[in-house]
Image 1 (cartoon, rainbow, N blue to C red):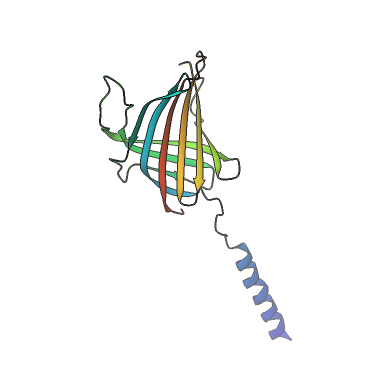
Image 2 (image 1 turned 135 degrees about the horizontal axis):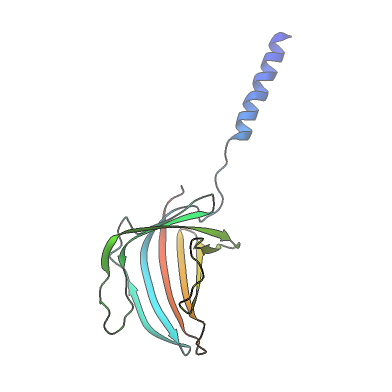
Length: 167
């Protein structure tokens, strides 16, 4: 009888350990994403202008890491310019820039990214940062809207990433 109780207690203990094991995170955005492409363009008077796409130079320091606690870390080591007169025509190397933000899921692979450290924006622009996940591809879209303009002005960047890690 003592053996039966011991086996029963052992079975309950093992079942408890298995039940408490953390499951895999089912949120597709969680993990590390490596940047592979950047498209920078402007929409003015509902027309596409200054459309520029960069395919390089992306390095190991150009990534975003989304965490299960709804924070994300962005890293970059180049500054990219629009295709515009008096701007450099190639990306400029900068010291690694790292920023930590928060994100919320809206379902269907759509996320909104927020900068909790950013105060009121007095520059006359409204910023919208949205991430879209499709399989192993992430598109991060940042749109600056001119609040005092009525011509549909939008300054847009679409950054494309490929998933390299689920952690």
